[in-house]
Length: 357
Image 1: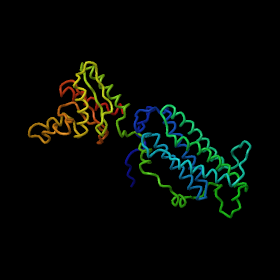
Image 2: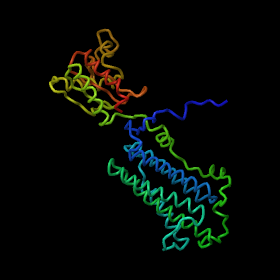
Image 3: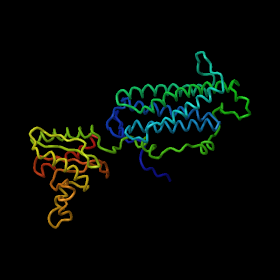
Image 4: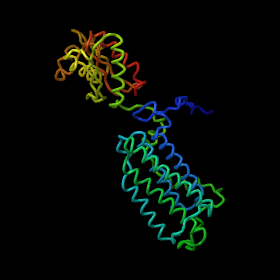
């Protein structure tokens, strides 16, 4: 019996939007989403080329490239994570392979018409997709910024695939220096050979974190960003105006440090510090400051807590921890009215959190 944990379809993209790690409701026409799709397409084309090969060294090289492209896709989803940046060593690997292959045959100087063989034609298709990926990456770089290492890598990858296709042609025509070396055929011309054992032996290790970053649908928000904090504050301000309230609204990260603070016209001066402390307190004690207030009364579990931490802890309503699932990703503090009024506005902010992330 097969037990299925979840459907492959979630209906989350039915409106033509998806999510990146730090941005929700991104149009699928966005250049970043186009780039992820292009790199995914490229990885699949390389897989097709790989399926037609029997040479274990070539297969290993292409699997290494696929693994690097997975890392590159993860870096598009989360551009702030250094682990997903493409190192110079990856580009140097491609350059070394280009130099090695060029030393094995005389590269044609005239314009090439792809299609001398099925394998080289498939490799040329992968090359053109790599060039498209390079162009989309350039567009993303202009609008959003991009990893310079990734830009160099995509340029060299297209060059590598071009040289690989020409080497395949030369070898299959017997014009390469290793054509008569006594090696077994390096390509399965019928594309029918079962390569399971080779794949098992040569499988490249890919970080589990990288795979999860790409495959978890890029919709799980890991932290509050400045942009999402601004959107949250703007929504709360509109609700405060609707209620006729004037407040200071503060958002902090999961480390308690402020990300954004907004002072509405006419708000009390003292509310600035109080709002920041409410946001900090909600993260520090992992509960709303309204809940803490009840526990900090004489005889309560947290009585006297407000005298600790250099006065940064406050025990009146208006601070709520911001959560995605059970994970606290930040804190929200509202100050300007009574504890109950501030708490109500903060709860409103929490209720719309998923709309602004």
